[in-house]
Amino acid sequence: MEFLADYAGFLARTATVLVAILVVLVVFAQLRSRERRAGGHLEVHKLNDFYKALRERLQSSVLDKDQLKALHKEEAKAEKAERKAGVHKPRVYVLDFDGDIKASAGEHLRHEVTALLSLATPQDEVVVRLESGGGMVHSYGLASSQLARVRQAGVPLTVCVDKVAASGGYMMACIGEKILAAPFAILGSIGVVAQLPNFHRLLKKHSIDFEVLTAGEFKRTLTVFGENTEKGREKFQEDLEITHELFKNFVARYRPQLAIDEIATGEVWLGQAALGKQLVDELKTSDEYLAERAQHAELFQLRYHEKKSLQERVGLATAQVLDGVLLRWWSRLSQPRFWQ
Image (cartoon, rainbow, N blue to C red; front, side, top):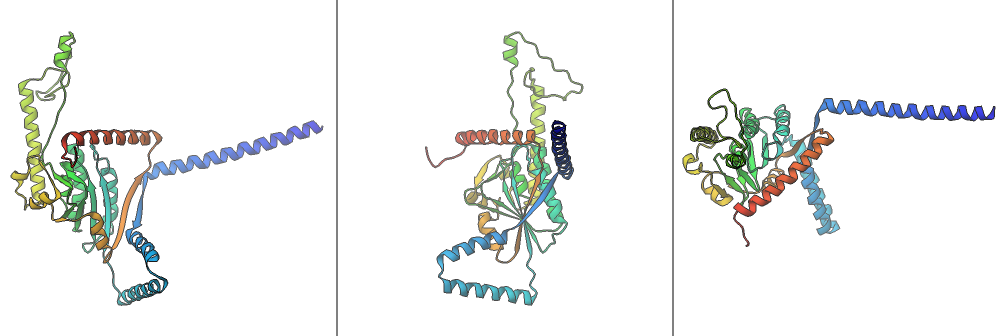
């Protein structure tokens, strides 16, 4: 009997543990389901608090106790006067766009723009810290259209370029009513490029046939494995010229002050030279500009984070590593240096 009692107690404890595990699994599954349905979330950080924390940390280290007390008293007095006077500071919405070849950050940008346009007014401002060396035409065309929504809504748009805004990156930057660039930022590259290898002669040498079947004369112009024709090359070049013309017209629409035929050669310029070409309006880093605006406006940084599966996170990390390797390799080959 004692054995049966012990066994019954064991079964009861086991059943309790199993039920608890099942409850935890069900709750976890529901939470994951909600996350998948939500898709992502918008994070908002007030940059004024960030700048204030930096300033206060320095003040507490540099000023003595009496100086610090007097400063805090003066700041509190100024804040009270502003509240009493009913001063309403304009809002500045800060977005970050770090572009890869596919302009993947455009997926986040679209949600960030949608969110801020639900609240922003013409008295506010949108600041985009933009970094991109360009990429696919259709991807950057869509990303540019997201920034065009801000202009169409009548909200002032400022684009800050600290490192590079070239090709598709400049397509986005030119939409800004004001473009700021660091002195050595790279801008321009208003051109179109396409390149691909062709292995036809190698395959022919080894008696390997490669068939390309199409319906439509120009369904395929240049191929990697088939034999390319002069007619196909001419059509491919014609398509590039059409795309380039559309690119030029797009930039000229938003930057009519440019001598578009002179600067749409595919060349790039550093910040100082870009200012002379009117590709930018002022030489200033994003840090300097935002620190200035924080004195007279409320700054809010918007970041949309999308939930990603483990497979997507691994793929994204791999792509970022490859992008970094390719960028470093290309920079060593093609960019001017200050050392040998």
